[in-house]
Image 1 (cartoon, rainbow, N blue to C red):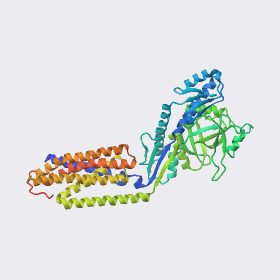
Image 2 (cartoon, rainbow, N blue to C red):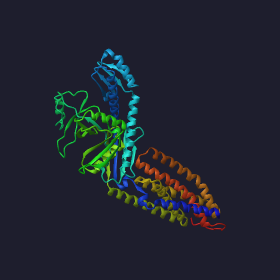
Image 3 (tube, rainbow, N blue to C red):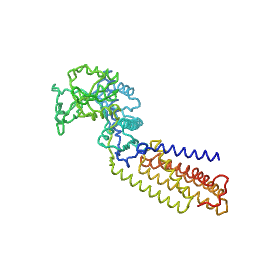
Image 4 (cartoon, rainbow, N blue to C red):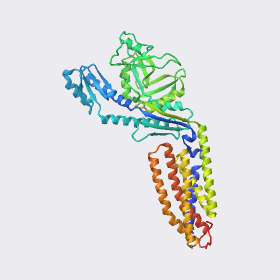
Length: 525
């Protein structure tokens, strides 16, 4: 009797805990993209951008090392298409010195003379490492942006183990364009000096076209100058072009923090703080260029050009932002760090809330229809004992949703399919047990003995069938994407709950029904 009592208390405790995990359902059960609506994005990380950035950085380091030793050369340039760095017009008299310095500054690179140039090729393993790091870093920084934006229940994951694609699913989003901008833009901030054309006239308003700026330099840019596009002046306004320095004294990677604030006239702006080391470089640069124009670039586009009035150290601000929301998004992206590579949207799908509501309604109807049909079958075919199976099946559903509530799992349409499948698995277990009990009764066993033998003999079969299904579900969860994971999750916990309800709870209900020490002559089955 004591054993029966603690088993009843255990079942009540488990059911009570699961009910506590479900209530209130609107807060505890999170709905997925296909049920709540939202945005589905697949981004491809442009890993070639990361390789180019690495080559540009190393080319700058090599250029500085050669200049410190007063070696003669025309320019040091990255060659992204060849995954190499080229020293153009180097002094062949001291080619050994060039080779030695290149080997020191670029360990692992293969160095060879290519015509009149010295070519340094990045090793294949280093190229693969840079590309892999770019994907992983992009994934983490997008995840930080999504989390900081307050987008609950969002899924940000790599699509495939060695893929350059990132899958983003965010339920309940009412502004997909803003989210796409938030997660897809690199937000790489740079400051560059506005260069003066050979005619000696500083370019204050920007050129009307890229060709016009190039013409100011006689059709050929010096190696330390690049042309960048500026922002348009209002809707349909003039687009400007600027000749800027190749090198940047500081970039977005030197930021400590960024925050939204209001300007003197109440306009939105972003204030930023640099690291002490970057602050020292910026102070030296701005102090030696007072009175000269300085351009601020975001993702390789000029967003602001201002004249340096005094030396700037660790703090600065970005003005000319239209709204506080744009300033909030920009400061968030700057705080999370620039993406190491650009991204391209390969797939974009927006699921409306109405479609999600239809999915919920149809899923609920399908679940109820399956549940009612299953209940009807068990009550008609197994009579009074069918009530036992029905109660076990309802408890099975309570346990599934209770676990989901505690774990903060997201319910998707495939997840509902997993719940429906567990209905069948739970009933299948009860059918196996009941048929075993019938066989024992036909052999002339007493009711109590038939029930005990029925559960014992059916247990191995139930365990085998559920275990093989769980193995398949675990593999689906491990290697599948979001919807498949939702199906696998509910299936795994549904099968575990099925084992508990069909073997433990159902057996306990039979023992309570049969009583202790009483002789039962007949069982309604």
